[in-house]
Length: 69
Image (cartoon, rainbow, N blue to C red; front, side, top):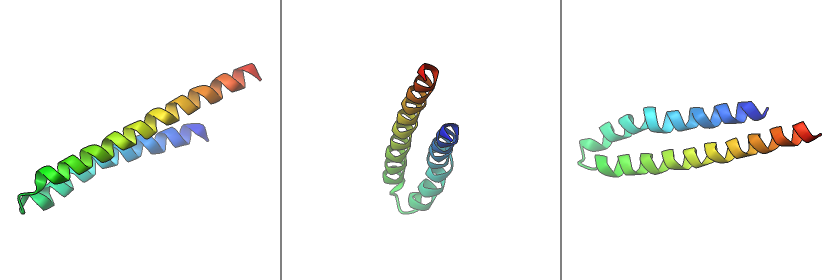
């Protein structure tokens, strides 16, 4: 179950950074606001990276707990 959470977080990060950014930028570049879209997508990607990092720490803690039990 813990591994599935990390997979989901990695997928979210890839979707935000790899798929959403070009789509949003292409929509907003016509209106000369592509830089705003890329800033928002970059912030969302950083947030998902933080979530991924926290889940990694959680997985490490759970593994350490299982080794001591």
